[in-house]
Image (cartoon, rainbow, N blue to C red; front, side, top):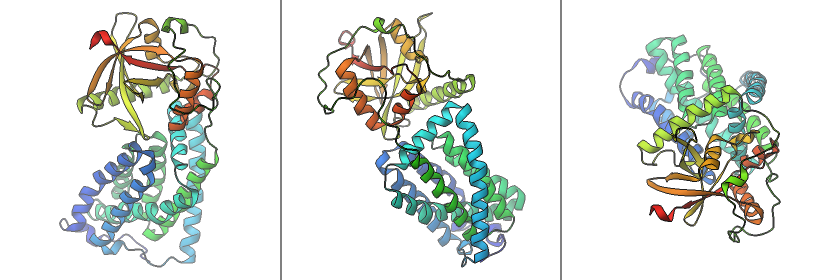
Length: 402
């Protein structure tokens, strides 16, 4: 196999390889966004199509990236490299999950995605399509071309930076952090002369155990707010609603949300709301297979509007949302705003409606809890973090505002 980076084709500024190098990065980002923000059932298929297409296109556009036959030395080197990435990554992952709630939440979402298909099929996608496809394009075609233009060191830095930037489109901090660490390591090894085949094997030996480990952590479960009955999802009778004022006080225990996590969440909310509203809901309307809406409440002091993106679960004309706040001991601000004033505005896509909030109780809440956890198991994980029962809030269109 090739023992060094081939800079010859990279020096050329035109042709199919140059076009693919220019267009491949935004295409990769778009594919990752489609996989992570689209339906959960299509996640792995979209991921495989994105990376498989880029890998095949790299082979066609620049045949020199084709890996040679792997030797025993390549296999041992790849195993050692992946073991090192796993060790360092596990340490960094544990520290991040323990100190930043957003990372822990995104890791739970990734765990949820790892259970969408069977383990054998998931491993086949990762080892036979995702890993080789990424290495053929990123460390093969793209880094080789950047090397011809900027030199070995700068090309490695640029490749790892672009690789990380493309993964930002997933909206998942755990995935983006992993891409930063692994991408930098593999780009450095490519700069040191490692062949694409060795890097693809190291990539596979890292990503397969990582996702299997997430999968083995077990389902998020359905423990939490209220007993779950055996009633089906269509048996909701609408009884048990109470006025919002009855839910003002709480003696719950649980963990506090760190200041850093609050700032991260604030920035994420502002960016999501702005993107959603500017595109009339065309972007940001779905995440992890669930519909996202923008709820605007009024602050008790001053009456200023406060907007947040939330998973929304339709029930006819009504919509149900969860006041999870990632399992914090405290209720989220938007829910506290509703306690003071249950009138709000809900945007779903291009439709904007004034709504009135009521809190679910009893059998209705139990039935909806079962339904919602089935759609996103992260809520059950949030419930385990606190003794506070996560409120389920029904948002009903206000007839007086029609």
